[in-house]
Each structure stands twice: as C-alpha cells, then as structure tokens.
Length: 263
Image (cartoon, rainbow, N blue to C red; front, side, top):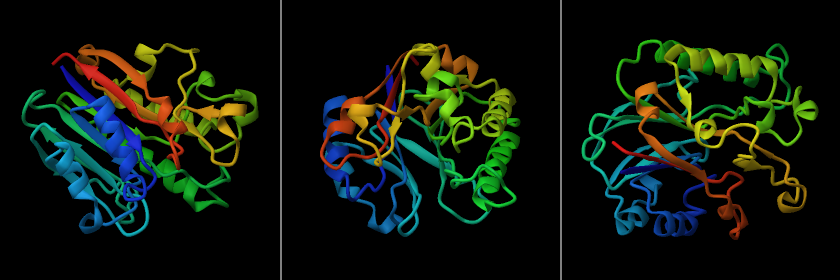
C-alpha cells in the first residue's frame, strides 16, 4: 500500500510545525507541497530529514509559488515544466523508485488567475488559461501510469463550491475555466480521485478564504485535486481530505488530501 498526500501549505517555513504534525499523525509515504514560498536553499530540509522523508525534489523561488515533493520512498526528479512560460516555480515531476516503482508523480500549482475572469483586462486570467492549455498538450503525450496532484485553483462541479449560482462569474468556478480544465481531463482520460471516492454532490471542499470565519459560514471550494491515469485510478482504494488542519493555529487556507493505492 502506498499513501500519497498533497497540500498547499502557503509557506512551508511558517508552517513547518504543522507539516511535522501532519506527517506524524497521517504518515503518508509521499507528500506533495505547493506554495512553499522559498528558494531551495531556504527549504527546511532538516524538518523532513528528521521525520524520515529523506528523498526530496524541491523547485522553489524567493517569496512566491514553489513546489516540493518529499518522500520516504526513493525517487528521481525528472521534470520541471514551465507551463506558466515565465520561469515561475509551479511544477516538479518525480518517478518513484521503491514501492510503486515506475509511478510518475506530478506536483503542480496552477495560477489563481486574479480577480476578473476576462483575459483582455486581466492578464493573469489569460496566463491561467494558457497554463492549462500547455498542460493539456503535455497530457496528450503521456503513456505511463501518472498521478497529477496539487492546487488546480478550479472547482469544476456545481457541488464543488458552497453556492454555484453566486460563484458562476467568480474566478475558480467560471464556465471557461471549467471547460479548459475538462479539455485537460479528456487529453489523458484522467480520473478525478476526489469524486471517485467521495461522489458528487457530497461535500468535499479543500479551501476556505481567510476573509470569512470559515467554521461559521463554511463557504468552501474544492480547489485541490488528485487525478490519476485510468489504470492507476483503478488501484486507488481510499481517498480523504484532512479538514482538521484548518482548525490548527495559523492554518493554511487549504487542507491536505490523501489517496491510498494498492500497487
């Protein structure tokens, strides 16, 4: 059994104690982090070394973005795609070399896209759509069992947000984003593990804004995802989101997801 987790940590140095607690309590074999917000030489390697995650692939930059995959299982880094086409650190790909050998694990942080869902007045929104189009061309070429995880910054289903009608024109839940993400899904036949194991319309949110008192209003969205190649998806035996981390002191605005595979 191989247990893989993903979490937008929103600063790995600030939340290192939370990561330590999560690793101790949940014990995934592999953890993919997004928004680490530090360059590789400032990544808290000692925290993970002490916790037994001695294999790491870190693609960071100063102050923003950044992704890292840490593992108890030996791995080999094999890719850093610049789907943003501007040098930002938003992807790292690894191949597992121990249990789950040959599995490709892609860790991605898709741009949020700004506030206005119109690329003519908001270049960030256009960059998000273009990022997804480049990912789609890449997915078209895949021929090995692959798991892609991370903060997609899109809630594709009506049940993936607290109020579909209120959010139809809000970035992360607009029709054009959902259509663009669907083209990516179709390019490889990805299986959305979140909805394989927790079928719609069951509540399955992963993000709550800091701007609202989340426990009182519960205005969540499902922005974080784990998608697998069809054959790999068939080997997934469990999936959950760890919502209690949102109640911890100074939490990330995202919660972790965990999928278990019988490989």
